[in-house]
Amino acid sequence: MQDRSFPHDAAALLAAVEQSPKAVALHDKAAWVAIFAVDGQVNDPVGSTPHVGTAAISRFYDTFIAPNTIEFDVKHDVVAGMSVLRDLTVRTTMSTGVTLQIPMHLRYDLASPEPGDPPKIERLFAHWELQKMIGQLLTSGGRGLLASLILGPQLVRHQGLTGAAGFLRGLKGVGKRGKRRVTDLVAALGRADTAGVTSLLAPNAMLSLDGVSEASVAEFVGTAQHLEVEKLLVAGQTVSATVHLNGRRGVGLFEFSATDPGRLCAVRLCI
Image 1 (cartoon, one colour):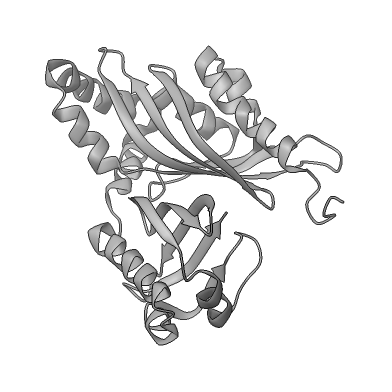
Image 2 (cartoon, one colour):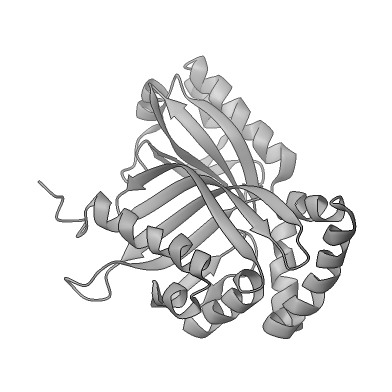
């Protein structure tokens, strides 16, 4: 029986999300913008300034999608409540012909504008590493260098100076230290070390074993003892990871506190 707290089943949510790569492949701007709620937002990459509302999302399309050919190589999807988390690699071929391979985790939060309406994307969070993408671009020879020279004016033309600066905020993040803290957490879980896990958490940190419901530290340690992580990506204050637990695969989101540096304020295992 469908959970009444979630008005759409997994198939409907996955179908809604799949409209994004379809519209991108067709370069259908109207269709792509239409999959978002009127007050929807795009966080791409996470840590940069969000693009909020139809007009801003339309400008995002003009800046980052329209000039490029983008392919989604999806490895795994998981549905958690009204969210879809996608583990994938995005292949972006820019106007100069250079192709970038961008490891990524996507989180789509969906809702219906009105009861009975099809789901729309309220928030898109794209977890990928801007610094490494720029590194790929600058080491891809002449075509990459030319693409980087085109990207700057393109950003300013569609986003303005403030928007361009907002995009570059995606260069900031918890970095390698954040990844080490995640691996420290996994190691403490493997030892069933409740005190060690607690030492890595901010006060009142939110823990979830399914991406929806909250768990106590004791429940989390007892259930996630055999957690394995790979493909760790830093975006803003969050480390995302491909996770494996007891034969199941999903996406983990490890969010760090802005006020208690180095400590995790939320850990969500969406499996």
